[in-house]
Amino acid sequence: MLPPLVRILLPAAIAFVLGMALTPLLTHYLYKFKAWKKRSGKLALDGEAAHEFNRLHKEHEVRAPRMGGIVVWGSVLITIFGIAALAQLFPSLENLNFLSRNQTWLPFATLIIGAFIGFLDDLMVIRENAEGLRLRYRIAIVVVLSSFIGWWFWEKLAITAVNIPYGAPLEIGWLIIPLFVVVSLALYASGVIDGIDGLSGGVFASIFASYTIIAFSQNQVDLAAFTACVMGGLLAFLWFNIPPARFYMSDTGTMGLTLAIGTVAFMTDDLGGGVGISVLPLIGGLLVVTVLSDVAQVVSKKFFGRKLLRIAPLHHHFEALGWPGHKVVMRYWVLSIVLAFAGVMLALSSSPVQ
Image 1 (cartoon, one colour):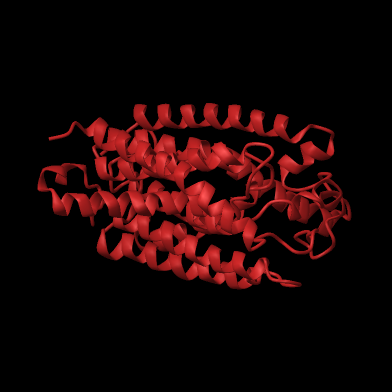
Image 2: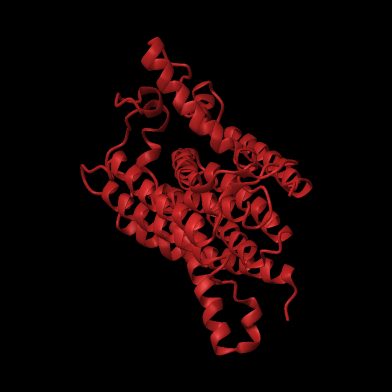
């Protein structure tokens, strides 16, 4: 019988090693098939040319391939099914298997389905003179997927409340479904944090590390092993994504990861007797800032006729002010660690009043 801590740390280590081993092969084929945008430049959220962004990143967009997120979910996929297969062949290793219906299947399925949809979008982006899936289609997919998962929490898992730190649970009944949809949409919108070499990998790794500790504290060992496994894959990705990045995470990484974060947050809330949803805005504070800066930019341009930021989201604004990309990334890493620590402390020190 392996100790719970080993059951959590070993999948993380395996995913990291697999990610490191997978990357040379993946990058060989990504460069061989020129898996990058064939036209540089992008449009702003209002449909106009993003002149300031294009000035800073015009060359970067066509120098490295997309789909680096395959390293993350690929290493997680191999780790999970590999351990499950070994447990079938060698019953003595069953304790190491963390692929469980009550804790792992839902976040794992969310990660893989989101990654697959993002992968299709990336395939469309890298074609000559082509764009990816239209935004409204991607939003529709997120809404449909998150509606189903929200329904599953409500109908199958009987989740009808959101826990409040140091307070009584907030009973919302079937509204748990639209709440999950809203959270998923907000998290998906935050995927634009994948905009500077090394930025998204560090931020997402801090978030998944936080929920590993929270799930472990709730004795959801399988869920903690899953989030630790994702963290291991993220660290392998980050190893090769630091400036100058070998590849970009792109939608096949950000879509699966952001949707999985929402599922994990709900799994560590009322279901686990914790406050996983309430601490999400704190642990994922930089994702919140990313989304709000985009919204503020659009509102300011639409209603006041001027830009609030040089470029949205905020991390590109700092670049436009003259900060080197690596300085923005390192400072975001520092902030993500601080926010993650604060969120974990809040989660561990508070419990809903029954």
